[in-house]
Image (cartoon, rainbow, N blue to C red):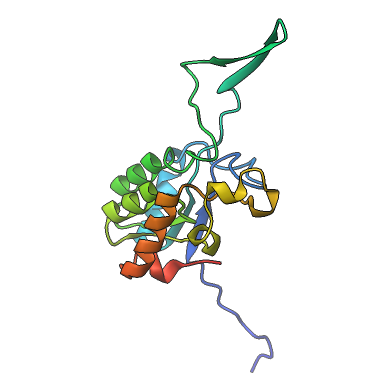
Length: 182
């Protein structure tokens, strides 16, 4: 008998980060369509796709120009106006497209922070779920704005968003309750 211990490693899921949304995500995904064959294979073997559900901020939204000692804020209509407070809602169309393309693929929207995210996951049905980090159940934007101690991406949002996260946990609907992360 061999003294070699064999260990079976089972891969149960894959985490996807869009490019530039979080620490070390410079090499993240820019287009999900490129990975459709992978997602189809994952669906076939019942793997989980874990999504970091934000789009990158758009730093060119507002330009600050000095003119005669005045600061002017210039709006550019072709700019997406994406920032830490709306990066998650702007991502949700990706969740819906992936769910529609792969209806049996189990998808987990990681660390949901908004009512819109909870509603999007619910609308996808039983194959989709989300995680909720504990600090999003306690904090809002007023707790971290100007206070770096509470700043952590994805940032806590508005009181109504916090309420939605609390409600879905209390519902025990299964879309978030068993996926609470800390």
